[in-house]
Length: 81
Image 1 (cartoon, helix red, strand yellow):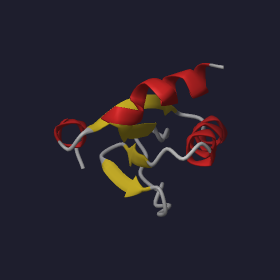
Image 2: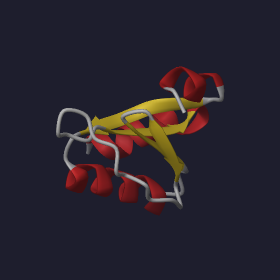
Image 3: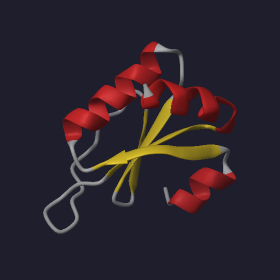
């Protein structure tokens, strides 16, 4: 799902990384605090309960985390500290 479509459906990008361990830590922080996530990796998307992260771009996978608009401020606070 394209980023624009995510935004139209009420999802906001809250985090991005090329490091899978950083992405995983951020995602788990959000999930452990009751925030649903959507992941997009170089043009693919998965829900919080799927794990298809095989896409790559120039040898690197970019992980984008999206949260619902209503959870955006809470998610930013959780990820910043």
